[in-house]
Picture 1 (cartoon, helix red, strand yellow):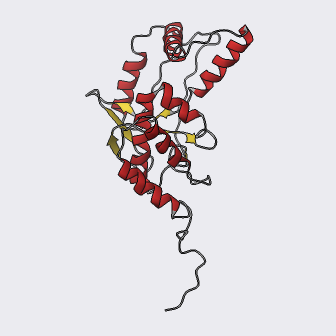
Picture 2: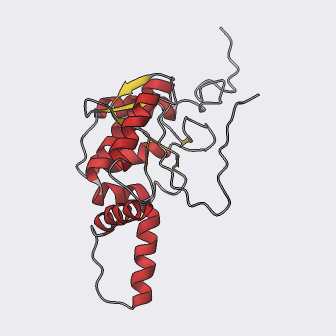
Picture 3: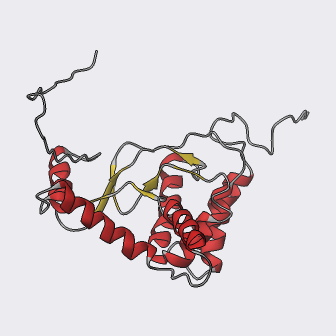
Length: 219
């Protein structure tokens, strides 16, 4: 059985609550709260700060021409395309990034991203990120290889760990596309080793490698 608690307020009471979470520690959750919401006194302040972040991000592309409806459609799609990749790292007291790995259950320095299934997003979403968010995308590429080291597979559908629920090797195209676009934040030899492993194995839920499945041999 789980544990829980509740607080009851008077009917009609106006209540404002700040919350923060962490996969690392309670102390880290407090740091996250202080950094992200500590200076905000009201919900309206938080909304205004969030709007400023989104305006800066969406302002990376300026649209000219077309109708008002066309512009609204474009920025609506751009907004949705910007919801991923989802950060899974936290900034420690020393100002450096750390994350709890959903793959091996330990804390690592560096960047991690999750909640991403590459089904079709590898075709356009991630190539777009490489063009307009190159710094973040470079971190993502290294995070892919870190995930490979920690769980033995390039993620195919992470939520937050590897679900092993998708066919194909879509992460391979992400790394290849990033390298072709000049994002060289990762070791290409490590990427090639991961490619070979992915191409020659059945997947996280497979029991045999593709090269040995179904063989009938004698010695």
